[in-house]
Length: 201
Image (cartoon, rainbow, N blue to C red):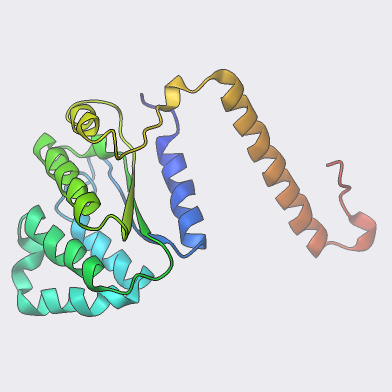
């Protein structure tokens, strides 16, 4: 369902894992935008993020580019192999698995691209179960729905528009209290003693 806040959640999740040093990469699909509406730039973007977030992948990604300069124009499966699967399988593990955030897969314009990416993601789960986790959002449409059903034993799913109203209201309350408390603390840290905002704010 549109407008339920999937992209906002994706950005929040990405920031949270980045703050913990566990965000490997992120990609936000957007229909109508050339670089974000298909898989053409997906794996290159993921590779660029990995080089920054996980420097031990850099030599392997660089080696792939040096070995085949045309790899950036190869098909998704070959780019997946050279830019994602091999670098992650060879790099240092660090603390816990890295998280790759993929937002709005339904915004990918070609259904074949969606099917291909879902298949490749499932390969990551099979071949590197301890090294990477995928956080993926999409409207529950085909082919996402059928592919997810095949993997429902190994995946967790949250359907935003089916969350009960009390849970939604509680989450909003927790968020607002936290943010207002943070704003008060930051303000008090900068302002003079006479102008402090009280803890009742």
